[in-house]
Length: 172
Image 1 (cartoon, rainbow, N blue to C red):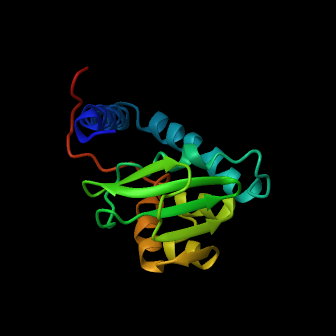
Image 2: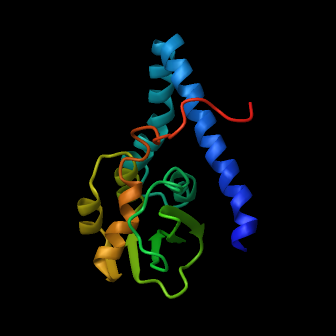
């Protein structure tokens, strides 16, 4: 895919994030109790899944959870890649213009390969463990610092809303 073909996709994704943040801020102002209940309900299945069902590889869906980290600021240099293996699934973590990219499949010529159980990934995503803790409970082949930089945007990504530069949506 060329840079010109991905630009509209990135713009749509950014607009969607901005819209989501705007709706979330309206909900927090106008219906704070409902907003708190909704956010707690949204986090509960992933939190429970990471602590209760992590041994069931068939029921884990790490790809869906990893989407929450895509687009967050990443300290990976251009061209650095990390392959993340969670059970039978492989993901390719990289960066584009300083933000994390997540793709399904193995990383071509990955600088690091991280193999972790689903429970460790969900604990990282929900903030129950740190990047250091996740790396400690994983197997890392290759450059450990690149692995840490690739995992950093995923830390507690499901425990707090993504930062948004805009306070109101575009295109609604």
